[in-house]
Image 1: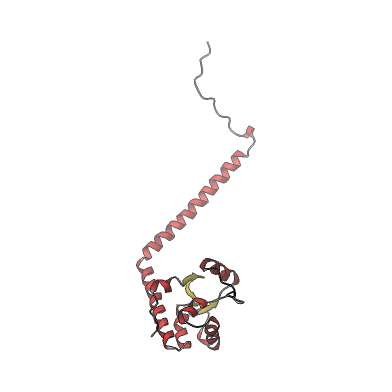
Image 2: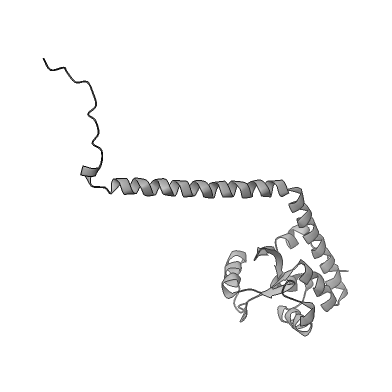
Amino acid sequence: MAEIIPFETIERKIYFIRGKKVMLDRDLAKLYGVEIKALNQAVKRNKERFPEDFMFQLEKNEDVSLRSQIVTLKRGEHRKYPSYAFTENGVAMLSSVLRSRSAIQVNIQIMRAFTKIRELMGMHKHIFRRLSKLELEQLSQAKGIKEINRVIRKILNLPITLRRRPKPMGFKFPKA
């Protein structure tokens, strides 16, 4: 039986890319204990099992951005092609492609992690809604502030003759 992988380890390897929760081929290969090349070859041999909503290849800029956030690669770890991202369904399909007993056990653990994340998100839906509402309000306020700044700059750039002259302040002695 495969070694139990802590939930937190799996959770850290689940990313939110293009609006989907995904795991990358390099992380899955480590979890399954196989080479990335072997994992990707197994997937390519069974391409019909991995439609676009199960798996997609990252754009170069997405891959580079993720790589810089995760860890600096060691010498010789640079890849010629961008990583593949597997959605929850794609990860589930991997268990039918990688048929070892340990792959099945790891897959079960990963599926439980996805389920737990979904449950946590469901329990805190109201928080996500409030955050979205606050974000929209902040954007609206930011537009208002930009407009105020634009008007102030416009006023400050007017020639002095067009600006109102301030009334003198202070006490005036009545003329005798």
